[in-house]
Structure formats: C-alpha cells, structure tokens
Image 1 (cartoon, one colour):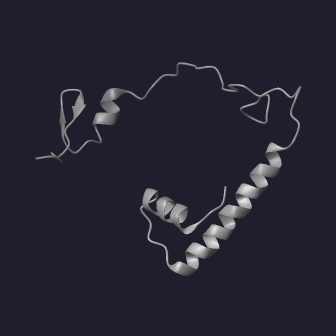
Image 2 (tube, rainbow, N blue to C red):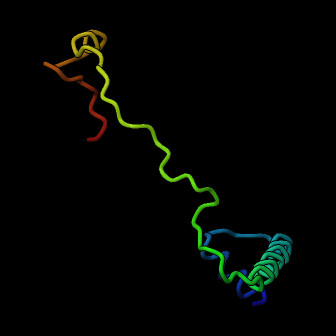
Length: 95
C-alpha cells in the first residue's frame, strides 16, 4: 500500500485535522515507513508461537476485597454546609 495525497486527505477528514502541505509530505513519509515495517513483521514465521494479548503472564493480580468500617455518618454530615436528614444538600446545577 502506498500513501498518496488522496489517502492523506481521507485520513485528514477522518481525524478532523487540517494539515499544512509540508506536514502532509512528512506525515506521508512517516506512514509509509510504518507500513514498510509492518510488512517486514508480517514476513516473520510465527508457526508454533502461542497467540498473546499481553506480554506478561500475570492475570488479574488484584487484592481480595475486604469490607472495612466507614466513617460515622453523623460526623461526616456535621461538616456539611447544608443537609437534610442523612443526605447532603447541594446547589442546583441544571435548570
């Protein structure tokens, strides 16, 4: 695949960008170099290599969920400038 002005214009429209002519020629050369490298990678024999979605074997290395006590509701509401029962009152933001 070759990067021509028509393709660059299409990519420009897709990305909602307006590139100056000097930038287009530089971008075209960069994109052509990237495509050449990708074609070179496609030539590599990968038979017998397992497909991977991530370079590391760690999967979901998360800690266990642990229920902890929360702050006392009355103590939190004591700092509120306005409250109603057990809830904060905030100024209206949408008309």
